Amino acid sequence: MKPITVRLTDIRKSFGGQEVLRGVDLAARDGDVIAIIGASGSGKSTLLRCIPLLEIPDQGEVSVGDAQIRIRDSGHRFSRAERQTVRRLRGQLGFVFQSFNLWPHMTALQNVMEVPLHVQGRPRAECREEAEAMLAKVGLADKFDAWPAHLSGGQQQRVAIARALAMRPRALLFDEPTSALDPELVGEVLRVIRALAEEGRTMLIVTHEMTFAREVSNQAIYLQDGRVEEQGPPEQVFLDPQSERCRRFVGMSRGEG
Amino acid sequence: MDIAFIAQIFPKLLAGLPLTLLLAVLSLLGGGLIALGLSGLRASSWIGARVADFYVYIFRGTPLLIQIFLIYYGLAQFPAVRHSVLWPLLREPYVCAVLALMLNDGAYTSEILRGGLRAVSTGAIEAARVSGMTRLTMLRRIVLPLAFRQALPAYGAEITSMVKATSLASVVTLMEITGIARAEVSETYRAIEIFLCAAAIYLVLVTVIARAVDWLEQHLSPYRRPTGARSLA
Ligand SMILES: Nc1ncnc2c1ncn2[C@@H]1O[C@H](COP(=O)(O)OP(=O)(O)OP(=O)(O)O)[C@@H](O)[C@H]1O
Ligand SMILES: [Mg+2]
Image (cartoon, rainbow over all chains, first blue to last red; front, side):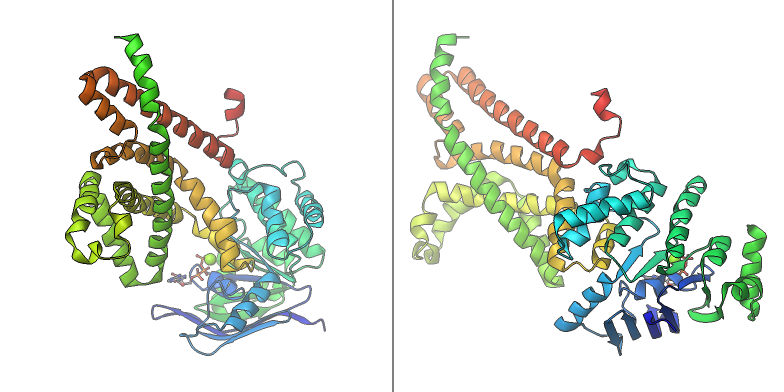
């Protein structure tokens, strides 16, 4: 078996008394593509955001590569050493947001170069070369000097994917990467993600694109009320789930699509 | 209008230009530091935020002229001030004027800075956070550049209004452009020519500054222009 790249252990999280995650375990091995599905409000985004500690769980353990953080209670304050570990953990992940979140004062190329150059401290020439290669890979070889505001949503999201790739992450996390896009722009972004899956990248993808999720993943997770309700190979979760609620959810989605 | 008289008065007024500029530059520098301090205070605690709010409330809510009078005439009323080591400084009208201008500018600038910081999208900050940036790198590379670009037009207006506000320093005997103009008027009684000349100097100053700020904004934020703007212009 391949080594585990991302592992969550007993993650719990409440917002103002409302329990959003009620003890979630998850392990992504090297090369896994895990699709995370579930109804709106089931805690998918919260779960994904707990991995780079954008949300701090009330309790649980997060480990990514060689970085590991354990949280015992909700009042947890990070020590200096822990804050450093959090940064090391984040440095091994590429996160792609629903709303792209490019830095508006930087060109596409500058966005992609920023972290390798100013956070990872790699040589400028190398950063530039790699950033250009990443942008070319997502089909934006002609947009190096474009400002985010002058790009379409699909193009912005592809820059965001290139930016995540340029960090040389061990795993990529996607939170509904196509939900903010016009329907005609969804395809170009899904194609890029599919190509990354074929390269053998480790990825966790929260999405409402059921067909895409089934085709691209080797494992799927159905979240319901902050718990993993169903988990297994995509053929099982999408086509023949054990859980009645999951069956209804994927059935409904198929009906819509 | 008497062209010969104007030609003669202009150089006299221009002699006050260096002092006008110095007052403006010092108060903007001091005001900028106060604004940074206030925004640190605001971020520090609830009490800190209330103190900063109160400061801004007082200095924006009262006339600058009264603030200058209070500092120039008012400080001398306190024996503690008169006997302090700072008294030789605080006795100087020049110091009092700069102090009042910078305290006032600090209040306005802190509000401008606050507006700029608030306009930095949480998305941009999250993207920085998730990439493993330290707080300092995030501030230096993402937050401040975006806040600065956002605040630039408002700050440009603050610069020009400070340049104009320096004319109030003439009431505490400073001989900057307005001070010289008043002295000349009391000698020659030719108020119209002299004050129009003074006004013209301020107008040129303000225009140059506004243009420079516009240029800087264009230069720093080309992405704010729609794609086609270059070809239309
Ligand atoms: N920062 C927050 N403060 C308060 N409540 C929150 C916060 N973030 C999420 N929640 C709540 O937690 C629950 C789960 O939210 P989450 O965004 O994880 O759901 P989701 O599965 O991603 O939904 P969607 O499909 O709509 O994106 C929701 O009820 C939401 O209102
Ligand atoms: Mg979500």
